[in-house]
Image 1: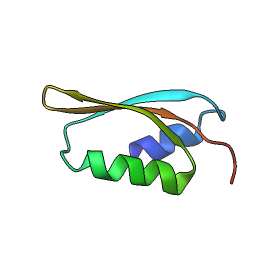
Image 2: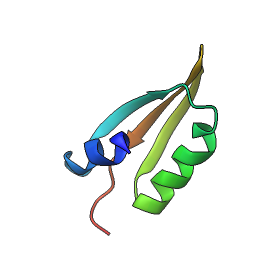
Image 3: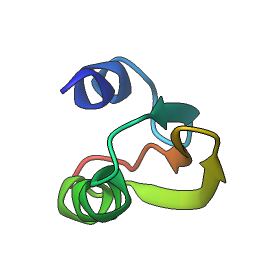
Length: 60
């Protein structure tokens, strides 16, 4: 997953916007953040998909 790789290269506390057209991302992204120890700051519906604002968590 591109989001996982990008977050691994960022320091804890950094924030990333992710935009997707996958309709299941509204289920997958919150689960990903919880499992990986990141915080989902915001989810926005946009034309054709969703935008997610994620804050990278620290080491678990």
